[in-house]
Image 1 (cartoon, rainbow, N blue to C red):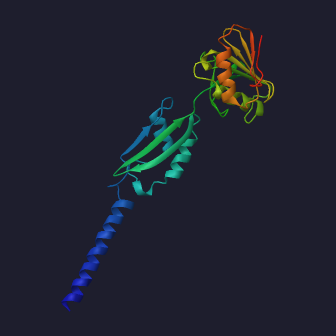
Image 2: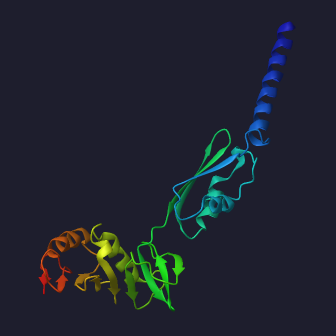
Length: 222
């Protein structure tokens, strides 16, 4: 009989321990959110990200829906991607990848700063001098010519990109560059970007007014 009572007691004790553990993890603030740690942000203030996360102080960490929190933070215009994870016992870790501005598009007397996907990160009264001006006929989200031009900007060698004043794209296949020193580059479509960039880097060492790398196999210098 003593063995039966001992087994029953142990079962009750185990159930009690499990119940207390479950309560601590899922219902109490003992293992609640004490800190929201933000990493990877430069342009977006950490406090703005914490507010967008919408997680109350002390909320049980185990019950935080990280996918939902990611979705809320993703609504911040300057955020390209976000990963939220739990750091026990009480930290919510938010890792941010911000959108990197690559060009500006004139719009009604102001300038829309866009990233590599054409997403507008801000609208400025003055064009940032370090970014090229993108000129397209239809400056709107998803425009094929604009996307082709942005792909070309992304393919430019690190040393060449700051020298570009304007990128013109009447169509996806007729992208051209105007350098800050006045020289022109006919790039063509967004195909074979590595070949075009490599050849252009070499050609720019030769004095000329125009460089045509639209067909990397047959280049023209004028």
